Image 1 (tube, rainbow, N blue to C red):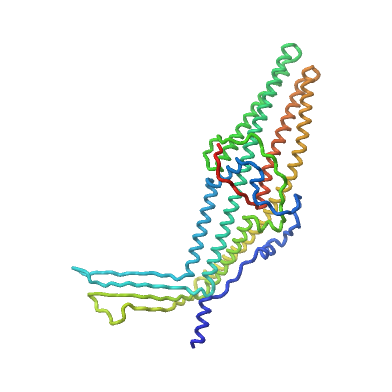
Image 2 (cartoon, rainbow, N blue to C red):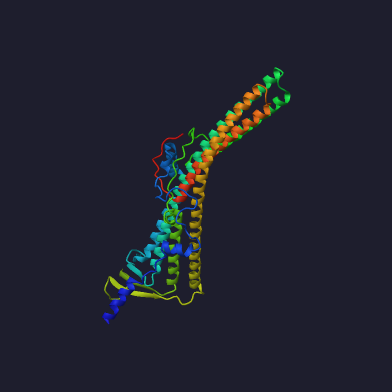
Length: 462
């Protein structure tokens, strides 16, 4: 008999082996069968070398690095994500606790009228559920996978915050430069107005030319005021990301950083194992898989071992003669027979959650491919546009200079000069917009590729 019971007890204590959730390779095969990955990115880019680890340093902008560090320390949204990590760690501890024995103590003290001497007792009890079918271990594995998913969410939130700070920084700088450009255009318009008035005074001009010059000055002033408002909004947006009061008083650089050299983009097949949001989605699939196993195991009987020790004494009651303290042990069996179909429905719910998690993984993976392809294409296009616009600005500068000379000698009217002036400043503003957009798109590319960064301690940037 002992030879039969010993292996049975060992088997009950060990429990059945858990099924493993799908590996990342299996998950990709199951969810992305219709998404055939190319050997390299279709939008182009450099050779598929490893993705750099510190993209923030590539901008060579110490104030930006300091602002990112400040945002990481004080941004409320990131603090919420960090709190979720702590919550998930606590839930993991809760899910793991049933695998250990549960121990409790109870005491009784009573007295009688006129003095002590009632019934006194101390009970110490311990119980342990034998996880025969893996219900508790599946629950622990689900909590572990969920905790890892939340940690990956935090890493992605951290990278996203750094990218938002960088783009807000570039936008604020561009807004200031656009305002300065509009101020220069206003001064030029006022000079044309002065020239129109001078020509009218000496009899070489007319009232219409002066009126058109005045109207051009008014339009330039309105444009400047719009850009000043846009700059204030950009500064407030940056300050909010940093956790500061949005007073639009943060100082920003007076020029844009040069666009860094093109970055290696790695391989499409490597992206899914590098991007934190994709990793988080994969871990949620694992959590859902384990919850299915937990729900299925909940339909099977539960076996628990119990043990206790007690000590009872009384001066007023005659207790049965027995050893004191007393010991006891036993086992409990609970088998769910009928619960209105709730247990089966719970399995179906968990199955549906697993399907949802797998579809969500596919959605995030496909979105990540699209973000990289778009960012690569934009990076190439904006570099080419900057070269085109550089030449366009030079041509417009030359055309404006010639028109201004011809106007001064009376060969053309003021309208031609104003048209050339508008074309020149439009070309300059367009190039400035492209340069800022190129920096923002480079930031988007780094975020889409899942590259990390290292932020220095915050510096005083005001």
